[in-house]
Structure formats: structure tokens, C-alpha cells
Image (cartoon, rainbow, N blue to C red; front, side, top):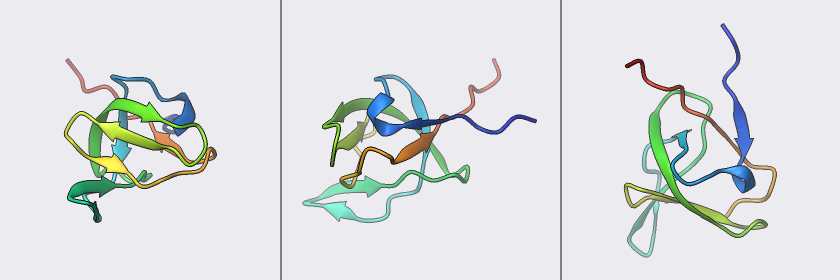
Length: 81
């Protein structure tokens, strides 16, 4: 069994699936999630803004808090077809 791949949030691409926490807060009504290493919830990246103190938005309407450039996400494993 191989270790899950991690990628810095600055290198995430739209459409990529990553592992996040459940909703753990809100920012002016927008639900916030965090990167996690546990299999909690897979989300699809919609957009990455900012390379230092940036945020990641997901297709389900959630986003992250501001993150520094060393913050990384675990790439979700592809589901079997």
C-alpha cells in the first residue's frame, strides 16, 4: 500500500479531488473546510486564489480559511469504475 499523495495548495488544479474535513465554521455565511489526512470528505477544486495567504474554493460552495504556501492537501484516490 502506498502513501497518499500530498500536493501544496498552490499546485492544485481545477477539477482535482482532495480530502477535506467536514464543515468546521463559516465566513460571512460561506461554509469553511480544512485540509486533513483522514478520509473524511472528498471535494472537487473549483478555483485557487492567491499563492501566499490564499484560499481554495470547491464546487460544492465551500472554501478554506487563508493558508500559507506550505499547506498541502491529500489527493483523493480515484473511485473504482
